[in-house]
Length: 226
Image (cartoon, rainbow, N blue to C red):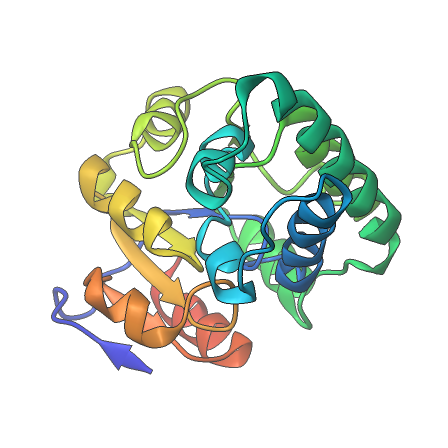
């Protein structure tokens, strides 16, 4: 685990989590769905690294980056193919080990929990409901209600809705998009290197801390939130 200077003994009252690749073990499936849609439409197939980089962005923003040759008249076709591939794999997606217990422990202890994600509202709500976590999160934001990462809009909306001081909030995510969003909102960030972006890329964004593994992430949060 890599840590950068933070006030000694600092405790956070609230945690805002990214969803895919942070709580949900879904990075491999998202990459597969993106590549599958490219194949279906006869487009250049990007590398898995290129596909992984766009995870966390809105789907439209991801397409502009991943397949710039895609004409506006084919965006809907791509989205349909992506969602078909993704939904076929959804039953295989589960929370990383120990994440459900972490969330329930934090919630029971009085911590304020939220989600800020590049998923659609329907996609997030379906996933939360399927995993039985409806009562854990106080508020959530998706790209259907706010500008996509790394714009701080969805995080600022959550802070306003929950009445939170940015200094008391921790953002947890697996991409530089999460880290940059947190910085723009004046919020500390814990980057996790077990998801879409590699540790070296995450370090370049200068998160407050960097956890290499799921257990590292859980231990860091348990020691600092409450």
